[in-house]
Image 1: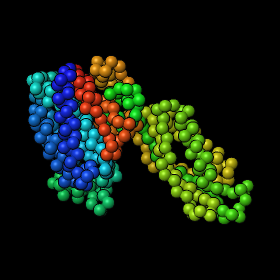
Image 2 (image 1 turned 90 degrees about the vertical axis):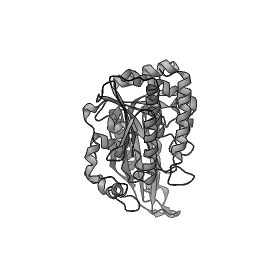
Image 3 (image 1 turned 45 degrees about the vertical axis):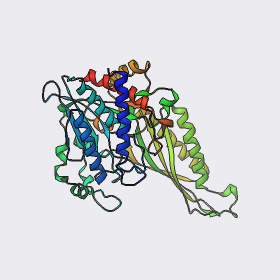
Image 4 (image 1 turned 90 degrees about the horizontal axis):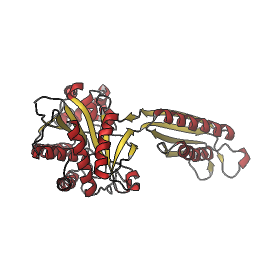
Length: 413
């Protein structure tokens, strides 16, 4: 395992390099780095330099991922894949994604300094686009490796009307060669991703590290209560078909029922629009969104059915129609049991106990797990804040993470 002193020095470099990458941004004073931008290519070049300093051979693949390989004792061996993403949301924090790439480089740097090579190689990938900020499609980088890019993605446009295909040409990539980014199943034996938790659980447990059990599946729905608009002063309360009061009653039920259904289920009503939207008119219709997530698809389905049944019941009692439409579905992604146990053993050796927890946010591991066994290590972040400039991790937590990460990788290689 990496010594405490080695881990401290490596963690200091990781923090400094996160700061360096945070300066590569399209918006001065903020961090915004999107797919196929000038800043994307600058970040790739900088990360490639750090990979090379750690003893790796580097290349940029056909979809813009930056990749590095630390060879095994025998050339051409199967590899353990490590990584995370280098793109950001707008006005982002500096650790979401980047921390996973930079800690992986430090693990390889430690092995290189010790002149250690295993029966398997190590590859690191800085994925080009996990967030989907520019084109509103996610996991472009990781789906490049798995060969699961839908053809229609090339036609998707950003806010300026630039398509993915044109953006690729603009930065010197060939959209007809996307398929060459795909890696064969036999190339990798496993995938590990280190990431900030983006939640408050580890902080509440006073632990720097946690091992992920599964990445939550999610469904997103557009829901609508349709009643009857009327004059706010002349329609008696007993004669109203108020869509907003029906929606409000249901929103309260969503919160209550989800809490009762288990700690790993979450449901959120994120948007709400009233029609006609006037102070002196009874709302005739309300459109709202529901986001429901769980690491267990069956539990999610049970909860969703209960919520929709209650919405229909409330509507019937109030003389209001209810309709819903699912516009987004992604299945839960369980982490590989063997890899999870390897991470858990390493974490226990570092901090004395292991906390297992689901990931409420999506990650590149969702795509990679479709082809290779995958697992994730979480690092505590301040107050669970993420996708925000206040995103923060402690250097000593990063040092602990490096010790556990290096031990897990050493065992796998």
